[in-house]
Length: 340
Image (cartoon, rainbow, N blue to C red; front, side):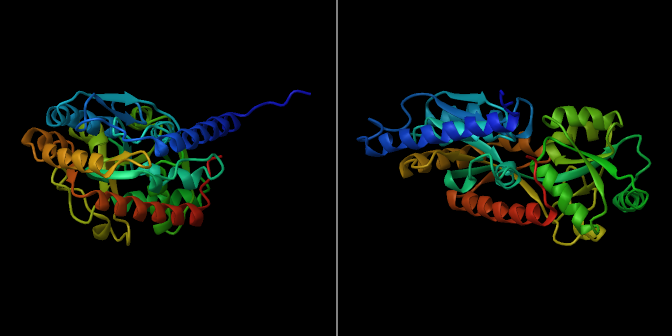
């Protein structure tokens, strides 16, 4: 009798094979002589984005790419490899040579996915070499423009009312195990754990389309994702997850203002290298990132969409990654979130 191979089994096998190959190749690189001749970089640098074009992570990589290339004196190429909330791209970089020519542009979902898919061999984000923070952004909760919900108080009341009636509110996410998914579950927990219906999509784009059409009733995502739809009046923002109000959304309240405790969530995008990336490469790229993020055009591109330029040290990105990795591990465990 022939055994049917499930999609998760196939994915697990691919990830396992890739990581095994990475370990084998890594051993070879570790024993090799000097990885580069001359000053880094001497050829184009590829930035891996584990999501489709058009999302916030891809946007961040493209905003900095031209200025980064000018600063480094070499071309910068964006490569998109979507799948499993960015994990296919992460796995690719995990097994890349640690020479600085293939780097990862990752987002907060990489701190969530390992907890949600515990048996698939998802890449541990703390194993990467942190380089620098590209941007930070609060999330914003929106409802369709046609929704009768006008503010967060009305939304919370609707969630609880529907749960009592046995019909949960439908909320969308870019995928099971995404930062948006666990953020919504944390909000649900803060509201007393009323039942809600998770509707996962393959990326933010399809979810936003259904949200505007009223096929789902609410959704969190980065402010930059919803910015054009908020400006056009197609969705209504009712909450931002920052400690203070967002300049581009001055009328939208913060968690503290609506009575949600311990709910300050910041989405971040950072650059990482494969394990073993040389310190001089990290220093060169970090310095270049900090220079690029001070350019008025780059700052304007981020801020116009509600994002804030990052910058700082590799240690700051490392601390942020580890803190969110722990936070979301606790949330996933408490709410029994598993997508396998």
